[in-house]
Amino acid sequence: MMKFHAAVPASFLLLSFSIPSAGQIFDRNELFSDVPAMQQERVDSSAIVVRPALTTEQLADLYMVRKDYREAAQTYKRLTDENPRNAVYLNKLGIALHQQEALTLALKYYERATKADPGYADAFNNMGTVWYQRKKYGKAIKSYQKAISVRKDMAVLYSNLAYAYFGDKKYEQSLAAFHQALTIDPTFFEHNGSRNGSILQDRSVTDRGRFYYMLAKSFAQAGNIERCIVYLRKAKDEGFKELNNAKTDPAFANMLKNPEIQEILTPKPVESAQR
Image (cartoon, rainbow, N blue to C red):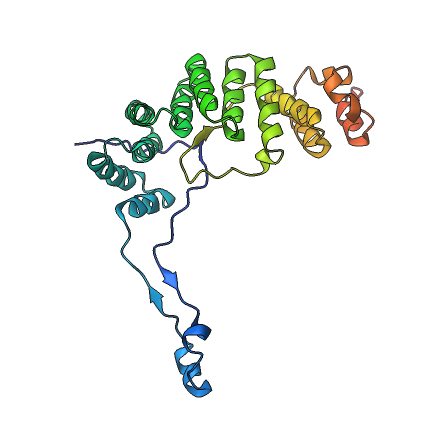
């Protein structure tokens, strides 16, 4: 019998869990085109809806959308028992357990998913997220790199790799990974992406000032001045002590004439002591 924890971590970001439609709503005008107007007014008050029963997977997905992770895990477990080589089911079971902080058990199912399908990048990514949360950044990096080796076109994988490099204090590698994520999808940080709920992210970081400065630098390299300003200001608000490095960093060279950038990089005047 499987045991689950009740706590749900706040730092997880599950990307766009969507449920396939379980029913179809027919066009009333099309259905009643031959019905006289008076009769049509009577029948127009309600649509004809056909609702077939949910499949087991749809039911489990619905539990996930509702954040009923215990019920979701139990339902996915039935699916994996019936389909032990289905990587998608194994990965989804891992996510349902992951959301309950049952990380050891979640990792087990992610690993089973990668063995069932060595080309399933989502499961490799989620293994990396387990290691990231445990602050085992070296293992997280290897997992994310494995995911990228089979799917080089997913911005989220490079973003996750960048967070792991940052946690490991490998700042140049982190910057390069963020830059690659923005190269693939310049609007990546404006949305969560969409992989039908099969990928997790953990965006928790320490040294937030440095982290925001690095994001500002990534956006500067990408030529996105608006987002550069946003994150440079955040770095300043966090009290990042190396903010003035932007004045001599080539990445910011084309941004320095912007009035908002100049304002951010101008030190606040020291108030004279009151007499």
